[in-house]
Amino acid sequence: MALLTVLTPVLAAVLCLVIGFILMKLPGRVTKPQRGDKGGSNTDSRPWVDQDLQDGTENTPRHDKEEDWVDGSEEEEDLSHVPYSPPRHPADTMLERSQDFYNLMNQRRSVRFISPEPVPRDVIDNVILTAGTGPSGAHTQPWTYVVVSDPDTKHQIRLIVEEEEELNYRQRMGDKWVQDLAKFRTNWIKEYLDVAPYLILIFKQTYGILPQGKKRTHYYNEISVSISCGILLAALQNVGLVTVTSTPLNCGPQLRGLLKRPANEKLLMLLPVGYPASDATVPDLKRKPLGDIVVHM
Amino acid sequence: MALLTVLTPVLAAVLCLVIGFILMKLPGRVTKPQRGDKGGSNTDSRPWVDQDLQDGTENTPRHDKEEDWVDGSEEEEDLSHVPYSPPRHPADTMLERSQDFYNLMNQRRSVRFISPEPVPRDVIDNVILTAGTGPSGAHTQPWTYVVVSDPDTKHQIRLIVEEEEELNYRQRMGDKWVQDLAKFRTNWIKEYLDVAPYLILIFKQTYGILPQGKKRTHYYNEISVSISCGILLAALQNVGLVTVTSTPLNCGPQLRGLLKRPANEKLLMLLPVGYPASDATVPDLKRKPLGDIVVHM
Image (tube, rainbow over all chains, first blue to last red; front, side, top):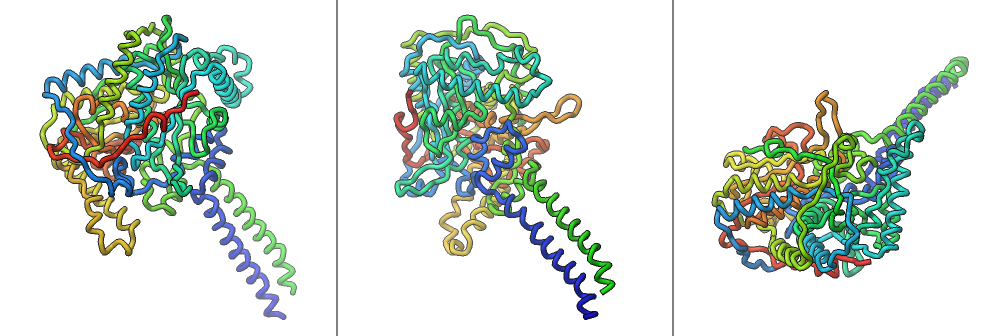
């Protein structure tokens, strides 16, 4: 009995330690990179995070096999190789072409004042085709370009984007801003979503569906689609059309529903496209000089 | 018995403290969006994930303020606006230009067989300048292009990339592959890293340093730099140079050290650049037709 009396607290202490050890181990199960889990906890702490943008690439394991991610997939190992000899320019022509292309691209600006004038649809199709020439992880081509010209659909998109945008502003600004919200109102009013002849909504496909119905992860899908978007911006600029690059926050699921896109597609960007309005203005921004962006070694 | 009577409340107190400690630790560890925390746990479960790629955009809160992320920052609200009237083409010219640009870009391929012939540096500089015209979240221009032509540095880069790549392959393939690793050897041998006249290493700046030394988060830095890379690929193709888009896994920190880049810069991509080798081949890939990438509404 005396022994038991002495042992009881020791036993209890050991029990405590064991329980404590188990409970301290528990969070490990939570922090494991489970799909959805992370997005959820992130959203708790930062409500402005776009849930839809979160559940894509960020949770996708980046597979070493895809390091050289173009033409590097297992499937492609079986592909025959063909000679590649693109046209070659003399040095002075190269220099001239590089200068001309720089001058053209350097005139590109993000423009919010878009003309309602119609734009030939064939031009838009060529621009999309050009975007589709971009490289992608394992040549998955994980992009869908939804081109909206229907006025009703454009308006519904505007309502969704503006509603979420207003929520974002209100949530973030809090009471201290409520009095003069009016002067910020322009920030969430997106008239161009009604006005622009085309809205291009760029979806990234986070995974593909194989013929047997099995899912195939699209590695680097967000990087791939962003690169493709860069080529699209170049193609728009090349024909004299303008846009403004935007990433509608928290609108992804609603817009996906409206546009009836499948579950593997997440909205990455929304580009209103058209001619610039005749009275279009842009902020007087400067770009960094070469010396600030390049390092030669 | 008396001892037990005395000890029981003490024991209870200890138990309470232990449980309390556990409970306080639990949510904190799970929901706190700490840098490194997530990357660390990710790396545990998927050793092939690039630590360096993980600690950038994925942990960056996406701020609603930046939704229209070009020309949309607070600073720019103070900027004066200037008229914007780029050259305008008639419809048939637009169509022709869009077709020509598509044809040019559609000839682009990822090429691993690069000629050692020198390339005029001015052409490379114009290509980088062109990449620098891309839009970016709040016009942060969060990119650094490191252009390596020094043979020793190129070789050191090759050693780092090949060593990590071999590790990736070995770790992932495991014993069952060890016997015929030889046939996969080409996968981690990157001769072009020595041969190509230029290696362009694209770094994303995850944050900037304000004049007062304060850090400024670069929202959407990975998307911005990827878009810029798309424009760079277009500029290379425009002058007849080739590259292969690669994202060197786990090499980021080592390469950043070698190239003496600051802590806010993370390696996003590595592009070997040059003329294609005269006997260059590419896998016989096809691109998706327009109907598979576009949806009109």
